[in-house]
Length: 381
Figure 1 (cartoon, rainbow, N blue to C red):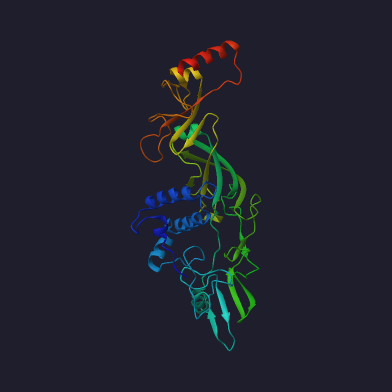
Figure 2 (cartoon, one colour):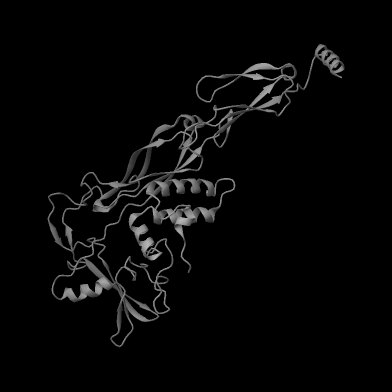
């Protein structure tokens, strides 16, 4: 499989800073968002895949060195050994060292054994000396994605919002430990204190064994006798989480805001996930948005169109504007008021206010008005 050029996908060079990569991602994510007119779901996924690699220091370093990421995620195909792609069809994918992850041992018979995790081979050697390293399994918190609805007024001024959402958070009763502070410990019976268990399965090549962290003691080899009653030993509970988010003036519809560490809390001190907010701008009763420009439709009478007039235009935020309608203005004419639109996102200046003039034609007129119109028509002709 051909490796993807993530720098080219985001339109940045290899020396790009984290901020430049983030800025390029936001621009392209907004451009290709599938919910947006003219969006492209495949491009959107490709841009997100590139960002997930280049925004991580570890993954980016690995990608720069090898041209792919060997973590079972984005970054190209898994290594292929001897014509067999062990990344497809064996659980666990590949470790960052390039071999199958999670300690898979492949037994081909006749005493030939190919270790899926090279670390487990050396651990097997040292196990006889009593120095086998335990695999402690605690999972980082998952990322969360939420929709954030804001008004056009908030786009104009920027704002700060408080978000409350339900997720897994650190148990306050035990501070995420999963057990009482005064608890004693006993040897885990499931793994006999080893912290690991073996799982053997049959495959096309014969039996293979997976060495994994014990799910009962999380790889510790011991179990507390006093489990926390609030979280039942998990160290996390479902609860409301409160997060503040700054909405920058001029933000675009569909734009994604990332709040680091505001996602699901990790297990027993592991890192928290991130929160991704997709901005949705509510429709406005008076104004429409076109990039940084505001569009307002103004109805005027026939005499105002012919003779010209001054009319009041409401402000989106703040005072209304007094606008002059030139004599002889036709229906559909657009009047542009410079700098009275929305702020440009991420840079100085504002868009314009576009006033679309509509000449209102009355459905019924009085006999006097009809006579005057007929006289006007004769005069104009």
